[in-house]
Image (tube, rainbow, N blue to C red; front, side, top):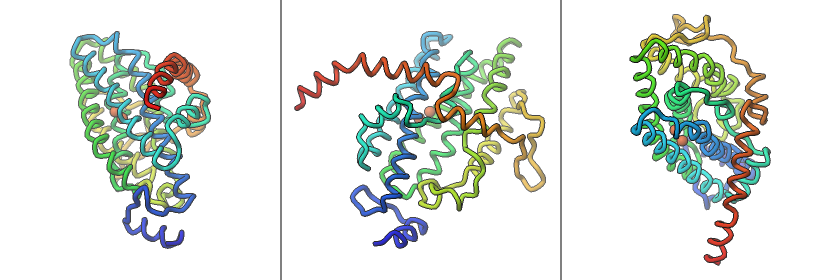
Length: 297
Ligand SMILES: [Fe+2]
Ligand SMILES: [Fe+2]
């Protein structure tokens, strides 16, 4: 098979296994994309972890702890897929903590209030599951397969987030205000999450059928699924231009693409602090890896 035949194969819905031949460019794009996903799962637990000890009830603590464990499990699964493609997990972690590798924009921001915990679990996970569901059709079969388990768990996270938000919205005026204030801060990063609206035919990730949908398609799906729910709860979306037009397309103010670029290249408000935490954790646990690996050798 040559590169052109491979391209036609994946574009007609064909899937590839680890041991199959694949073009170098395809392998490199896969590694980059999947590694960023793994990094995001791992870094994504940090904003929520900060709230485990401050969760308002025992049940909320348990649910949040379980969610954090799920996300770490996702990163573990995903890094194994990257490893099979030729980049060991240790190198992924090296590149993450050195700032060379990227992770999703939403995990570079602070979690200021309990409202943020609800908004993250409900809306950030909702935005993420839209991308992840589309990956069920990924041309690289091992990645598509693990997405089944991941998507199942993500839908559970959304229910947990929705329940946190519903409880607050049915509470006092202060609690409702807490959610609104949090939504105001998260809306920008949520609108940036799926990336700039480049035509999918020009997106190499789509050309190789690593992704099965374009960025704008994903954002429209997010708006369609969640804006009506947000409104139903009595919340206001902080975008005066947001409306569904007669053709059923959501119109909105242009997201701040400069902010997105700035944040994902490692200049978010919490980037340094969170990477520092990862560095320290890795140093502190080095002796465990040394002992266990020496034992296994
Ligand atoms: Fe996850
Ligand atoms: Fe999740």
